[in-house]
Image (cartoon, rainbow, N blue to C red; front, side):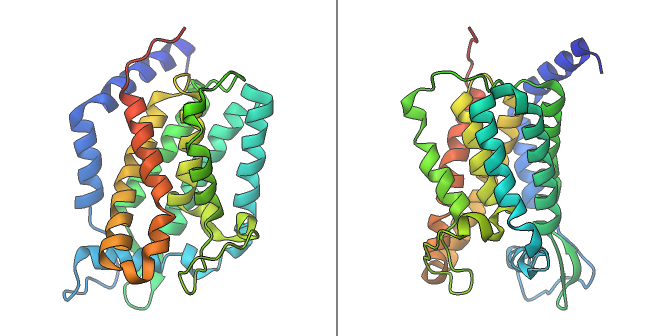
Length: 271
């Protein structure tokens, strides 16, 4: 695709994703698209309970892919430091990596194989996470993100400790209690989890805002808000006795996604 055509598509997508109806459609896709279940629904349970069960018993939760855990923890660390010290030399690689990461997240977090429901796909999350992945691939093509070293306002650095907390995820996955084991930075499965990697990626975009791809920023943060809403509901309202710390560790997704979405709708003038 020629550069002028890429720019036309970019501008059109910026306009479309800014419309109120796009946000509504995005939310409704998450709420209304039912999961695909080969063994049928359990009529005694609500749709939310079934989706929660499927995510809790996803391919990622099975530990069959544990060999991928350190790979998807170490690679993003390397790429983030490459961006910081080398700027745009690694911007395209970073964008394509993030897109690939979201593809893995889509498959591993939203597909499950269980005795109860058989093969199942949480279609709402599956579709929208693929859209997020495509937005990052698109950025890899159009290259709107500018990671040239510059002075970043100190007021934006509040996202750094929150993003690090989400990446570290100091939680014992068996007891669901706090566990500040530093080895989790490189060994736990959250490098393949939407709720933990999204604060990292959005955090980087907000630090370099406004010279970033607004489409990527907007779509990623919009899904981040939707997913974080369900996490707050489950962790703090439905099962606070057991999941309160898990809820705390999802607050980076809440705050950074809201902040990023607000930035994506600001009208800014690049100078």
